[in-house]
Image (cartoon, rainbow, N blue to C red; front, side):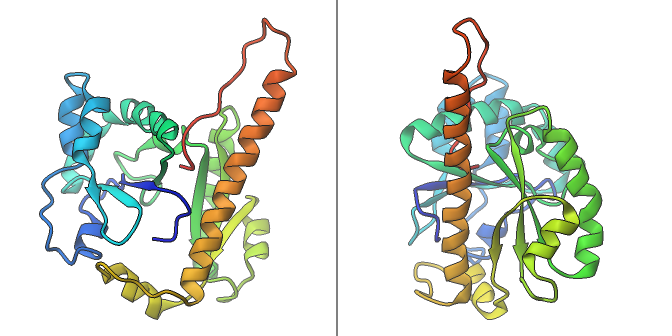
Length: 248
């Protein structure tokens, strides 16, 4: 809703179901297309061609939705799709479209690992409470280790700064760079999760969402510029690694 460019939202949470169809669309839109249809297309090597036909416009926004699987039982059938989908999502950058992937909770069976470690930026989202930090600690270490040999940057998005800990302290404890933070505003969150067509024009949550979008894009753009500069300084016969994606 607040993203600065046209954006595709991919629901890759292996627990199944679509939070956006249930919340934003109030369950009034049939879950008739999405990842499972792409998995079927993958068997015929048609993912890139079929992707535009599986997207749903989110009214009142510049966003499109690729709905998730219909149940957790379908997670296993998506494993072969993730690497192919990653390539199709990379190609969207040339159209001026960014991609946001909701990967759900980490460590679940059927987790979209290629998307996690093939994105420009992978954010660990956590609240600032002590139980949340304890739960996130081992996964922060995993993200650091697994992305060390890739071009993916790991980062942190903190929800509810000051409830009770400051975002900088959270980032220090988890040893991940703080990329963005979202305000703790339960009323606005409840309205937005069930909204359809019109949205609040102002408020702490909306302001922090807009700021987070700009901060995330800024990190990706900066990393791309640094990567291009490094590649340009290499000898002509050196192998360069291209950055990719659109703010995923």
